[in-house]
Each structure stands twice: as structure tokens, then as C-alpha cells.
Length: 100
Image (cartoon, rainbow, N blue to C red; front, side, top):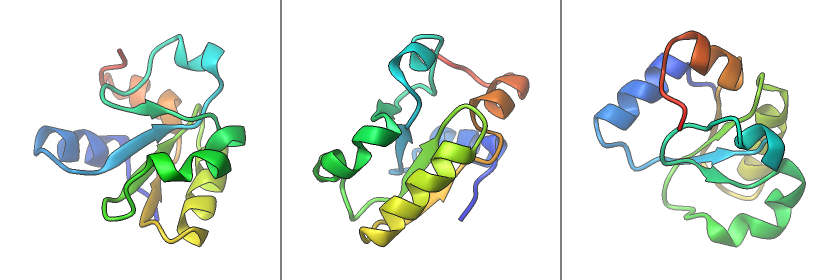
């Protein structure tokens, strides 16, 4: 399933309980990520599924949307309700949304 940067920003403003997982590499995350997101690089995701709450939706984000799509597939296969942000952080920042 997909969610746009604008829809995600609105969910965050309205107090959504979704978990945002940034699956980029550490050097990319150092440039800024969505406030409140958790960094779990895509290569580490399988080993860190226990860090996430299956009762809450997970929104995966990366730079452009490719890795987050792979992460969402992996999360869905593990029983999570998973979303991806097509366009990733490129679209998030292009929309003028905050990246802390």
C-alpha cells in the first residue's frame, strides 16, 4: 500500500500511531529524516522486526521509494500492515515537509 508525503504529514499532525521506519543507510539518514522516524537500514530489517509493534501500521521510507517498497513487502510478509512512500525523502523534502 502507498501513502503520499502529504497524507503522511497529515497523519502525523493528527496523532497517528503509525511507526515510520527509514530504511536508508546511515550516511543518508545523517542528511535528515522524518521527525519521529526510526532508522533501520533495509539490510538490517529482517533481524529487527521484533523492534516494531505488529498492532500498529508501519510506514517505510527511503530516498526515492525503491528500498521502502522492498521493506514494505518484507514487513507485509511478516504480518505487519505496511505502507511505502513513493518518491521517498526526495518527494518529502520537495513538498517542503520537515526533515530533522
